[in-house]
Amino acid sequence: MSSISFNSHSLQDSNIITEKVLHLTAPDMNQVLEAKARRNGSLLMSNYFTQRTIKLEGVIKDTSIEALDSRIDLIKSYLIGEEKNLDIGYISGTRRYIATLRSVVIEREHFNTSWTPFSMEFACAEPFGKDTSPTVVSSSGHTTSPFSEVFIIPGSVGACPIITLTLTTGTNVTAIKVENLTTNTSMTITRDYSNSDVLEVDCSEMTVEANAVAVDYTGVFPSFDSGSNTLRITVTGTPFNIDLGISYLSLYL
Image (cartoon, rainbow, N blue to C red; front, side, top):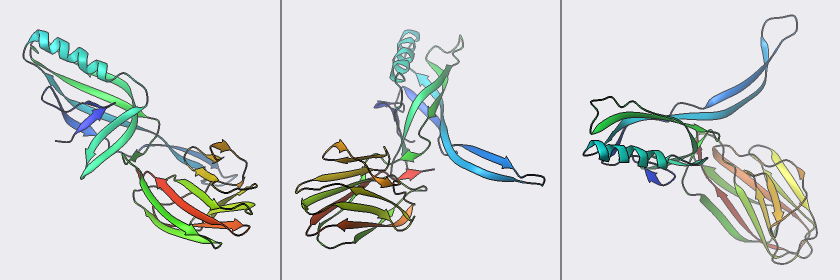
């Protein structure tokens, strides 16, 4: 029986028995088609996953009518909150969804004195499941340009890493290019760098910061595929000594 919790509250124990956990159906897609002029067929203009629906079904039970009343109220209190962690045991680990309760149905008949069936439905504005903790790839002491890091992203869709560049030395550095050779996407951050500067490119939140302050850039945020990716860093200005960190959550369809 799979473990399951919402906002750190268990939905699988001796009082709430979740028999069905329906979370593997692919998310909804938003497809925009444009009809071809004066002929059959259409052109696919955009194609994005938008949201996921997760359904739970089972029974709630306790030792008496009064205890069951209290148990139902307690479980309902667990479900309050928007965009909370919905953690479901899967394979040998946990698949995490960011979810909000859409509905809860408790069909308690007059004869349900110590148990009652329930069903719940959760909406996930973030359509993909994810790991509960990030994978970190790091290397240090880079002194020549360009330098690269090849790493493998598990999962069924590409992740959105946080890329951190720490300049141990770099007072002559004037530009840093962050590029994924696998997807041919890149950005360049041009500024006057100093020793101990920390440059962070967050591909999920789409922010670029130097020492926790937003900075300008040109180009686009690098995208990443599931599988092997080659991240290349090109530095303008020498000498420099840079440590590289890559942190990401694997995503699952």
